[in-house]
Length: 441
Image (cartoon, rainbow, N blue to C red; front, side, top):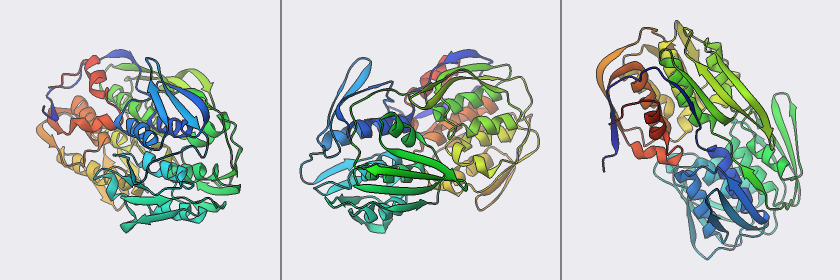
């Protein structure tokens, strides 16, 4: 079966209501925490992507059973010491940095050595940012060149740590938090602002966690060990998946979309703040709080001309997964958009900043780049006529989806390789595009 798509036509005006898949970050966290709970947990609207399925397969190898029902997944946990694996177990995290880094936090008390591997893309990524703090807890970690494969063996004599997370990485912060719930005493984390899903789930599960803001840092204190009971959780829609449709509605004339029941956590809505600064009119309706997470319907109408932005660096961490499509908006906005301090983009599933600028160059968008800063010269009358082939992007799901949005918005004939990449995060992406009227070959 072919692993590419062809798009030859822009999308006609549309007015649709859709729902996207469950939030990937929360889905993985729920699976891992359910594996540590005492008793049965039920997870509704769990994202059924490769990354989340790999999380389920990993806890299964560690002795935790689960069952898929029609409306939910059921996971049977045995508490903080409940992992019971065979010798020489290997966990395959696939493409998921979230899974690889977070599950390492849960293995700090493992009696057996566990090997963690990933795909080619994940195996290029730096893991020193998490192996170093986990070693401080007492875990024995073997990692050549600070990357996967990694072998980790825990200890019965865990010790609490003080950790300063300077990168704004929710994965690193969360891994340390998961190790902390198994560790006697108080672990203190000073963390640069990042997603706070783990803190919110901890509070929902009544795990003793205290979080305050001091000098733009989150100070998190966790008292362990902290057992908790099985739980029920309905995963909200993923704003990163929603972002492709928000941008598509903005870039397609006379279009409107409502994306229902989306997680609009303050640490995730950078894209909405950025696009509204670019003269979009994105509104949130039917707001509610669910287990600490903010959920709303997101409404976008294409009725305004877009303008350039000098993007505040303070919004980077809350939009880090959405900058690829934000660049597309900048390409069609009036004026010169400026983005800075985007080095973290090149530490994702692929060097996304490098690849995104290559795509902009390929389709004739004027830009200037210096290191991790970029200026994009917008053209409100952008209308492509050429043929474009998008490949060699290390099978990064977000690059594939960005390319689809560009093709449907800007015109031209596009051949986009590696369609299977969307299985890692958003398997029904192409199905939803077709429901909007997209002609995809």
